[in-house]
Length: 232
DNA sequence: TCATTAAATTGTT
DNA sequence: AACAATTTAATGA
Image (cartoon, rainbow, N blue to C red; front, side):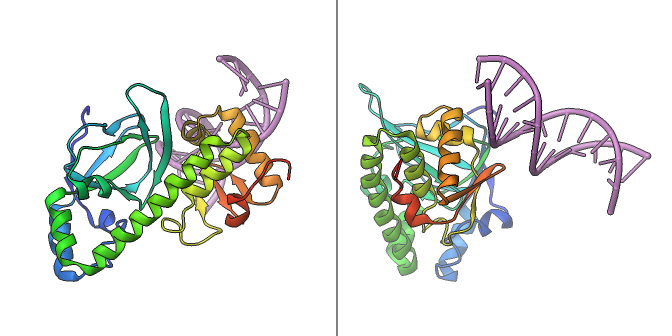
């Protein structure tokens, strides 16, 4: 929006694109040439509902909040997109407009490839199709989970589920890795105050499912985090 | 490399 | 919302 300008991708950016190394070399060439990168400041909006979908977008580094608030009602779902996550494929496949608002929760580096390149890859690269198919499947699971999360009343449970969703197998292959997110950011994501998030994290730490660390959390038991129930 | 300082983040009230 | 304590990052000798 402001002074943000897109630039060509640097080698370091390319390394942070998980599907790039998996597709055929002859296809990767076009992608690296067309990949654009932009830096977002906290609070900056990447795309809004209703805008035509021109890019397939992914996070190089940072944290984005994906929300679909209907014009009339309250925000429906929130999903965090962390480093390595790509989104917008559903919209691009149908050649529609964006159905979500994407906002940066912290300073983030975001990459994008043009819609034509996205379709070009779909028509040629089996490896790319495989990645997108996986991605769609994961996203579907996330939305089903999101419906459940919305119904949860207990803050500790909401935090637990949201953390589990962020620590997704697709984005973070191994348990025990550190998820870099501050308690403030988690508060924005889940819709709770920082204090309440802190309280919830302390409870989760006490239960042994996560370890609270400075500037992030470490998931010790992803399964138990997913199934966490307050008081039991 | 170490010490000092500022900034960010956390834990509590 | 405010405060103190802690951790990290930055700076410069």
